Image 1 (cartoon, rainbow, N blue to C red):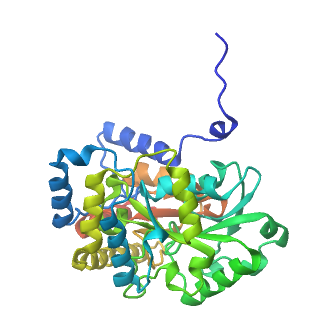
Image 2 (cartoon, rainbow, N blue to C red):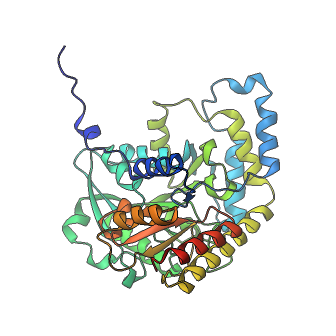
Length: 389
């Protein structure tokens, strides 16, 4: 039999860093050692009771197991309500569509916007899936570096003109995973003007607008004049509502992009499972008090972890937003991966090397705020006794 030949695209892919980290975690556990896993951003909070009840009740109806085919009108109205109530933004129903989580939606949206050989712009460091949206479409991926000295904001004026001429869309996300900063309002105004000038679509990933620590509430990209003219926003229920496994997110904004993306996705799926839609409606239209309580708990964890690390000699700045902390590795280590391996071997603390998020992430690590305050206290005690700091 002739040897199997796989596509050039899939042959680019390598097992992710999280596979290596999980293997290390299992190795440590098998050796009888305790592991504090701060590597993956899965919320440790439960969904709100009214959301779980809506899902449970919907699952009792046999009719809800048929193809959905489209978003329920009530679901689109719930997104309208959420954007008006939470962000003060008026959205029309033909400016909204659901996807199976932002991960799936981001992976496919490039196919609706790019031809093979087109160019996209993504942040470095940034969430790895951003570049995948271009790779899946056969596009070229260019990177705009975001540096600590520039507040982790893109230097729009210094992106080469020849790159901009080829660029179909630019992925932006604030608060940004992994660097944990928020963008000031003036940045969005500049970004929209920049997109209009260079005829570039903006795709804004808005996963963490409910988990910020620098102001009372995060913003939507669509809150700013002209945003709908140049782009769309992914709005996820995973982190705000602790529905990571339910896989539901929304693409909201430019009507033409939403319409064309719907056409693409009609070829590959039959709509979100109806009980999930019912749960999303309950989440989007229900009380928000638990979201604020969670934000306050994340803020306490942020202060406890970062402040405690500074106390023992690791100069880690407080996170501005997201459910993560971004930190420079101490001096004396060959790489962020080397530091992570030594850290888990000596202390049991498992974190993610910054190099997993791009070349500009080398020299940093990311920690997830997914354990409660008593466990953070235990982590700090172990780290202090380790002598690594």
